Length: 218
Image (cartoon, rainbow, N blue to C red; front, top):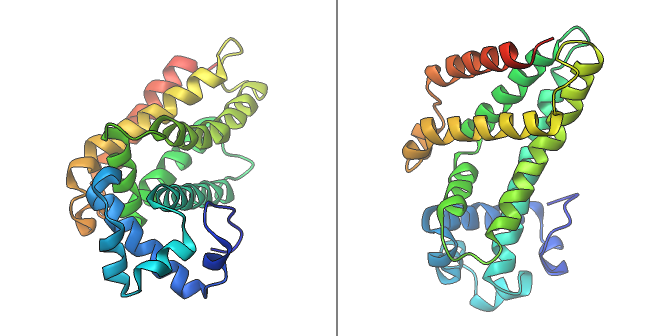
């Protein structure tokens, strides 16, 4: 896809974007449904209706294809975060900004249920050699967004000056991650169900932010 630097060969980037997207969609479905270990390149090729040799013209092996798909997912996550940033107004306090971030996370899962399902597969699959590295990369993306928001809130006197912004960002990221797993993880076998986040999730996000506010507000 345009603008991405990922572990694919040049021949993949030379494909029309429509064909790139088709390969991505089929690979996401396979990895999300089967996990890394059980996913089959042959299944992906069969669904695409291409020759086996063609796939290896685009990716060296299954590992590179998986890493490409995961990087693509992170690219989408960053796009969702940018959307949250676009919704921030100068008069928003730090807690409103945190709520917008949480809401963007919920909307992301509703919009890209298979990407979320892929994340869950990776999170709970054993024996994946690069698992910790890619999971860490996802959470760093969230923390890098939250820390500046918290630091600005501290400068504006909205949260206590003795707070550890890195630790709070980690806690907030872990909280929304766990909420999404709790509400949606068991329902994502069906993409249509996963795409309909329960109303209670939004309500619990508000409650969670209120608890955080009482703990760190100035």
